[in-house]
Amino acid sequence: MYIAGEWCRGETGRTAPVLNPANEKTVGEVPLATVADLDRALEASVTGFEAWRAAPIARRTAILCDAADRLTARADHVGRIMTIEQGKPFKEARGEVLRVADSLRWNAENARRAYGRVIPSAPDTVLSVRREPIGPVAAFTPWNFPAGSPMRKISAALAAGCSIIIKASEETPGTACEIVRCFDEAGLPAGALNLVFGEPAEVSSHLIASPVTRLVAFTGSIPVGRLLASAAGAAMKPSVMELGGHAPVIVCADADPVTAAKRAAAAKFANAGQVCTSPSRFLVHESGYERFVSAFVEEAEEVVIGDGLADGVTMGPLANDRRLAAMEELVADATERGAKVLCGGQRLDRPGYFFAPTVLVDVPEDAELMREEPFGPLAPVVPFSDLDEALRIANSLPYGLAAYGFTGSAATAERLVRDLEAGILSINHCGGSVHEAPSGGFKSSGYGREGGEEGLDAYLVTKRVSHRLN
Ligand code: NAD
Image (cartoon, rainbow, N blue to C red):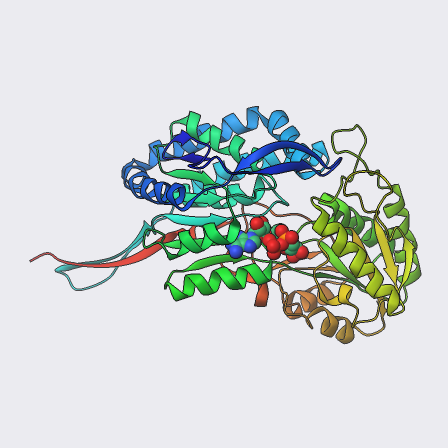
């Protein structure tokens, strides 16, 4: 852990093992914080906040950009650690490290333009609106993007001038440590950034209840998000919630079904489907259905599964045994309800949490797979004859994170954009997130935005100042 500018193992030396999901072997130990460790982090985040908010913006930007450069230079090293503890192919892991370094630069530069405004008022009064850092942030991030999730929160908090205590995932601690090392070496004041691990419920309840914490930021599942949002609400603290999704992909009659299948399959099997914006319900117009399904199966069969450090591997194992069990349950439930598995459908007979890329058809709407976020390499494909019906199915769940549409018509595209209930929409591709634009959900998928100009909003408070001059 990293508390008050010092690396430490925690008060009691209590640890949990960290596993490599490609072979289930223990690769290290992660320390677990006690309440006393958390209290030290809270105290440090107060002094860290005072020092950091007082630093000139040019100095803050320089430190953050220096940390970004250090991370960029270590992309191979950090990517390798990520693959070992999370499983994704090295190329994806390295790409994630490079992307997050760039997102840090973007947030650092964006913070220089977090302007307030002066409002016309009486001649003897200056009326202005200032934007100030909200204060110490408590953040909690999951294991699927071991660099991406922590950095979204760290970079926004520090760019805004806040301090932050981050509890990164106990399943992928090495990547988080390497990120924090870059800030430490870049000269961030002690206490501005603190990294802890522990029993998630213990850590979050203590940090959220503390009067020191001014904002709660979480990425993870909807049930845990509800819990943390309730705790934040009880303590009257704002929160940013980046929760799950179950993204529909609507392939219209006028789209090329083969191109749609290729683009959607590439997104589906990235990070073995463990992405909150992963395309996960495929609604295809009946005219192109057969061609879409056969092209999608072809893509699924071309996926090369293995240890993410091996050359040529395009999909690693699932990150933990919970996902493996969830995949087995979802496939069993769907097939019991009449779905057909066209490829995959089971775990691989070898050590490691490997599950084959899976395509299912004839999946009824009441199958768990059509209602619960799969968070794994499962693709249920369903035909439709009428766009209204496809939109009804797409919007029928409490999720509203990402949605995708394929069409050759500008008018149909605008219809999809208008009617799909999702915070992140892509037409004719299934692209990933970009720093320049905000990400976040509708409905139970959460609230608040990360990235883009909006990404700093939650980390800043607005102060109205009326200054009478005589
Ligand atoms: P989970 O719901 O138990 O945990 C999700 C994350 O929340 C983990 O990082 C966990 O450490 C953390 N967490 C759990 N309880 C917490 C608490 N009381 N306080 C603070 N943090 C807590 O499940 P899981 O098995 O790790 O993941 C399964 C599901 O989570 C997936 O099916 C997916 O829906 C969702 N998930 C979503 C994202 C995302 O990016 N939105 C990322 C990872 C997992």
